Length: 249
Image (tube, rainbow, N blue to C red):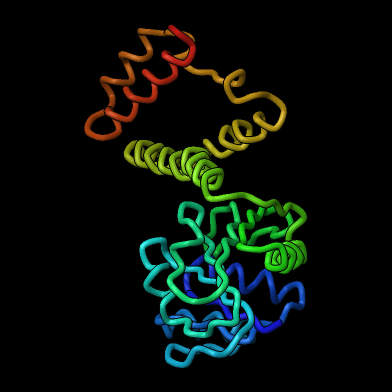
């Protein structure tokens, strides 16, 4: 099967790397950022182009959500399968006379960070059983966790991921701002972060909650508020209110 990946960002890079590591040949990686495409091409030995889209049986679109529809229009071949990797878009966003699908990997991707692709959950949605079999077999080559999911369920999977990953990482960033402002090495907090994450493998998150809000420690909460200002203060108040409401304090 001839496979083309469209995109040059984090997801495109990791999808290309996951396939090549498993010996799945890619016909081409296609996009508009020649500098990034060239880096991927040199590292993974995949032909690339910014102008001529190669003929393929399967096109996997790995671009930002707002670009998926526009990018999908460059695929003019009718007898092919096209899948996007978005967690929030329906397969019907793909604007062409071809078979449409979703090939969603549930993970946060950065080019500089190595990943164990076998642990990444993949969620597949297709228009027919044949294409479902093709994508399940392909995803199963690189992951041990492949499932079917329609758009309605996938929207909630993606929403949950935003809370569990994107928001948490933003809190890490805010925490580092505070530690940096006081010349406190952020490395001090890494064991705490590690333990927080490891704990939810054994304990339900709601049962693992600690801190001044769940204890309703008004003195500490007020002290912290005096130390903060701007957006960090707003976040602190909102988070504590949410914790207290969850535990009805």
